[in-house]
Image (cartoon, rainbow over all chains, first blue to last red; front, side, top):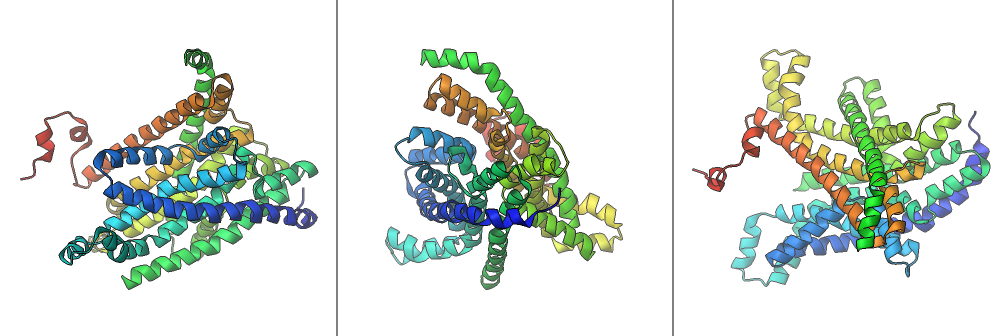
Length: 215
Length: 239
């Protein structure tokens, strides 16, 4: 069975539609949610009273160690009032927030102890310590790791098929089913992922080198 | 709740069957992934451009395209090209190659992270390249790579939850059947705990491997000491 370019050009607009309307949308919005929520979790685990912090740690580990597909289906049925795409965005945001919280935690831990002591010596308020001294140093080191999670989320978006959201891959399957021909569409979907994710990961590697160089 | 428990009791064979598929895919997938990781991780360090280039292309392909796309590639595309395979085989290949590609980067990075002095010392002692790798570099790199490999192993376990897409009856599909027999919160609560327990068992096993690997490098206590019960102050006493 030979490669047929007609199927590529035929299906491309359909795949790109799924790519823009679901894959990109979910990646961007969920990343924003995960980045903010992850930071809040990381700060809460350091500042909340011990029992609350312990409970939070357990919840975070539980979410991290169970499959996102199961969480998607669970949330889909639990929040039937919301549409599937919204549920997907929220679940991706919360799931990846638990990963990003670990990254932030490592970043905060990497700020030298002397910085904390210096803010005490300067009698800075707690909020000012976090905002003006700790976070600027902590976040810089975390940027590459956060970027890698965004790429990983991007590649996980086809899991949304489990809750009937029509992303690029499910469009590819639909096209394949209609034409009894999966070869070109699946490969095309893979290539589109590669085109988007590979340059991004190269850029992140460059950023990593630059941060390593300047610190 | 009582109805739920009796429905759960009735569904036990199904849940066990689904769990069997999940565990099978995890074990076979991670075994293949480990082989792929070691082979391509070493190839990516080769001095020969062709070997290194080949390894990089394979690694970037399987890292850069989505796991779901690869699953469908093995399930839908290869049969159309004349390679028939069972859904289990397609799943094992997809998980093994995808996570193997991530693992190859871990293997490569860990070998590169072994301090330069160790390489120089083994050259100074005129060890052969094979001897150097086997006795000096790999034991140290192995201790470095275990935590990252553990993360990948957990991700692989969680990744198997999508094999319902290729008609396999795994734990997630079994849970969906249980949901219809009982209710959402009961079935998925139960199922998430099962996945959590599986992931936790894997983590404990990998932690044990890490303790052993470090002990063999002369760091930390032996596995037997770490597992033995003793009075609390025996561990915390730092002279």
